[in-house]
Structures are given as structure tokens and as C-alpha cells.
Length: 133
Image (tube, rainbow, N blue to C red; front, side, top):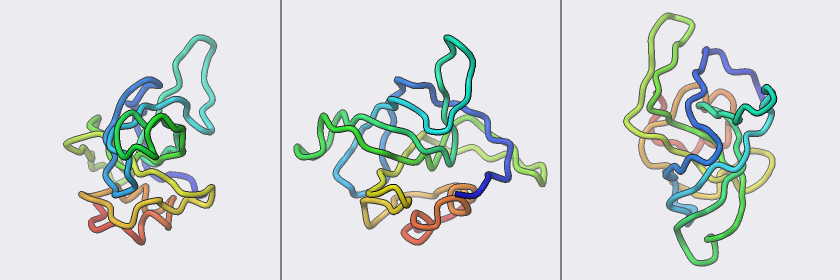
């Protein structure tokens, strides 16, 4: 997994519920933990675009519900800055559910755009994505 080039503002706390933008069977997920997060005592871990998170499936297909799985954040409402000075902001917070530890998505279709930083870091998601911004 490569480093992210942009200075991404971490906007999604643990406990936050977000929608998924793929056809994996999960509709709404809740963030349980953030992988590779180094923080301070008593501070809730936060996630941003391109981060791998552990999620609990709140709604979706019956075989997916009440299960924990891995996901990657592909969009966030809070704007973040790219090295060329542009600021990127999406309309919603969204994630893609992963199938395995290599970063391959469980779904075969990703609805809506994904961030360029996600495509650089997760090539499996970039293959399935329809639009990369």
C-alpha cells in the first residue's frame, strides 16, 4: 500500500454511519476501528479518504447484516487539500467493502466517483471504479 500524496483531513470518527457505494450487499455500515491509526490517549480514531476501516454492517442483505468486515473510505464531505493547491469535496461520505486483505472489492460495480488518492493506493478498487476525480 502506497502513501497518500494529499494532506487529507480526517473527518469520520469511530461510530459514524456511512453508506456503501458498491453492490456487495451492504447498504449502511458503521465504523468500528481505523487500521494504522496512531493517536493520543482517550482520542477517538478518525478516518479519511483512502483509509482502511473495520465496519459493522447495519443494513443490507440478510447474509451481510450483523457481520464485521473491512472497507475503504472513497468519498468524504469534508474538503481536503491536494499538493497542487486544489481542494476536493464530495457530496456524501461513502465506503467500498473489501473481499480480502489484498484490497480487492467485494462488489463488481462502484456507483459514483472515487477520489484519485484511493485509486493510487488501492488498485483493485481503481479497476472497478467508473469515475476517478
